[in-house]
Length: 164
Image 1 (spheres, rainbow, N blue to C red):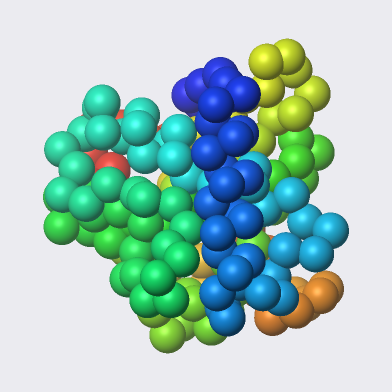
Image 2 (cartoon, rainbow, N blue to C red):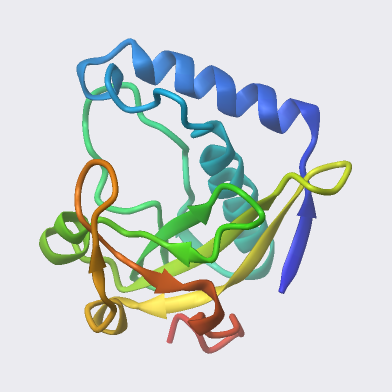
């Protein structure tokens, strides 16, 4: 597992992205009582780590407030990569939405957790799972769209062969 310290600047950048995103139609309903900025921090710090350790064809850019939905978060070795975040330390699952996994599948999903219980806060890059494996997990629905419930404990370790 990779641990990366979160700076106040990282938090500020992510919160600014959320505020800009809330101003477009796609973002005006999404973030009530959710600390979505933590997912942005996870995505951006994870992307930076991957840029330092792998050959990246397309880095993550965070939330896009242009209204254009992107195809994936990153591209590594021609593989479409999606970064999924557990935004609280006690969360035990990734919850990719069924619609996204089935209709816009990515090759690899990276699991990341935001740990707010340490100072400074940190993110933990936990591992990965392939799209075909996500489809085998149970479907749940709490609020909003139904999702696959993928235990963080089932993620595979990331190594130099992950994107082959």
